[in-house]
Image (tube, rainbow, N blue to C red; front, side, top):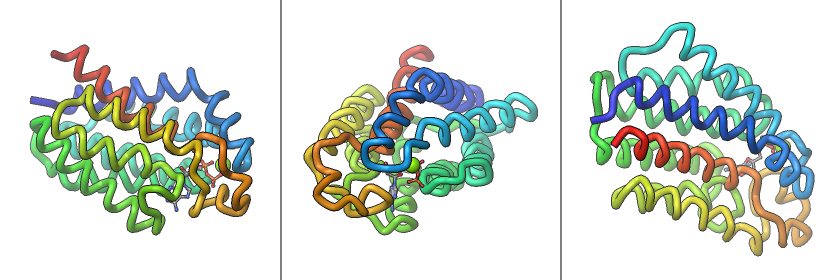
Length: 201
Ligand code: ADP
Ligand code: MG
């Protein structure tokens, strides 16, 4: 079973990954965007960890909805509302119990990812975070590790794609040949989940 502390550790691990990879995320965003993805997520996940430390919510759903709200209120870019929606919708789907199963989390994340697709109007193959998130939620039904592998593969697979959504789409064919920053950070999020699960087992 996964409790509120598990979810807090997951998001803390994501915040650490964002600190470590911020320069790389910003570099990827400088190739096909406006060079702020690393700093956007740094600002967002710093706010998430301090909110969770200040007032730790009692259940998994409440941890994710708080985190989602913080991302929406602190990240100016497209990724803030999108990641915020992912976490808020996933948290809402988890409900207000004190523990959830891995299968319940996988199902809730599927709802969260569907909400991201609806908000942003993107689909797999458009060279966005969904290219990592959609295969990840499929594979999470098998295991956390499989989810992380699928997210990494999905992020890498954005390199040859032409962007059809977001700022990178303004570049047209010039977006081809670069890895999508949001797909890259989405893989960090799912990898942080898998590592947290591994450390808990
Ligand atoms: P901004 O584009 O406003 O500067 P960020 O740089 O923080 O925001 O985030 C860019 C990332 O957001 C992209 O790499 C892409 O993965 C994701 N993104 C942008 N628009 C969409 C969308 N409509 N649907 C899904 N993801 C999107
Ligand atoms: Mg940007």
